[in-house]
Image (cartoon, rainbow, N blue to C red; front, side, top):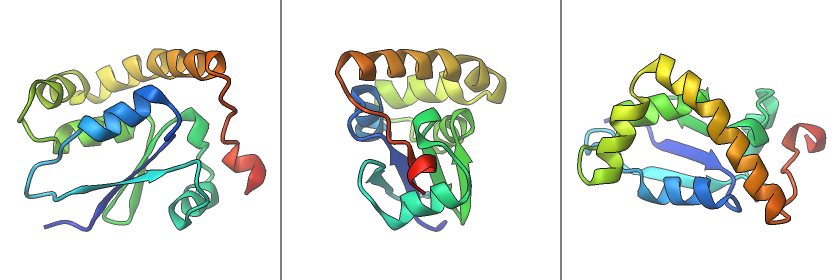
Length: 129
C-alpha cells in the first residue's frame, strides 16, 4: 500500500470537478483524497511553495512527490482501476506520457475558456503565496 494519494484541483472548474469525482484508483493504491484548490489548505500551500501554478494544471501528491499537469494525468491513468468506461478510457488515453503531454495543453485551454465564460476568477496561488 502506498501513501495516501491526494489530488489538488480547481473545484469550480466543471471539467476538473467531474474528472476528480469519476477517477478511481486500483485497490492496491487506495482512495484518492480530493482537495479543492480554491480553499486555503496546507496542500495548496505546499503546491505554491513548489512553484506550481494551480491555474496551469492539477497536482497529484503521491509518496511525497508532486506530479503536475500532464504528468499528474498520466500517473493517475496508470494508477486507475479498469472498472467503468471512464476509467478504461482515461487509462487508454493518458497512459502514454507523450499522449498526455500532447493532449493536456488543449484541454487546459478549453478549461480556461469555460472558466472565463462562467465568470470564475483564476486562483492565482503564486501571486498570493
